[in-house]
Length: 192
Image (cartoon, rainbow, N blue to C red; front, side, top):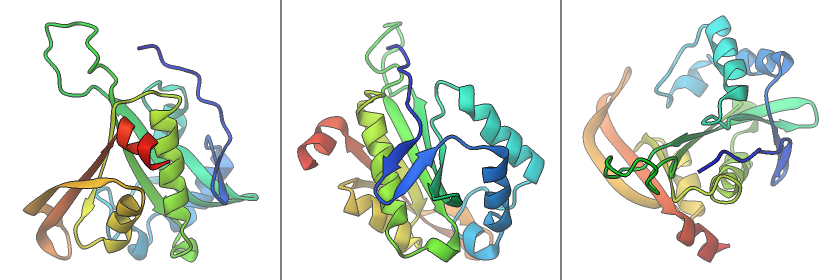
């Protein structure tokens, strides 16, 4: 499978997704390390320079299709999409499982939470994954206590495939349940 050119910017409901600039990352870093943001993230505090290098380095990575979500010039969130191989027998070098799966994630500035923007971002990521990128399956995960996140996934038709009992470490809460959601390309297109 060849990597198609992904076109940016792109609409995501009421927001626009585009590749990040240094100025965008400055805006994100104003809220990224706040307690209410990191509460449900696996990667909590980030070093600003490492964060910047990671985001800007991903712009040319054919497996990283992460973007910032903006309204006008204000960055209100991020969307991450990464391509991986699916599970498959390795004796078939170019098997259909190569680059067949994607993972998604989303994060919002708390000032914009509760307005449906995470759903808009995740929907656009699913459209990108199944449309231009042609993957077979998309997954996403979260802590079970992060109700807002798993509601986004369910709104978009993603299926809860796994609930790990006390499989996820949380610095404040200890061992808590984790969830994994997924959707197949044919399920996504049937729901459209």
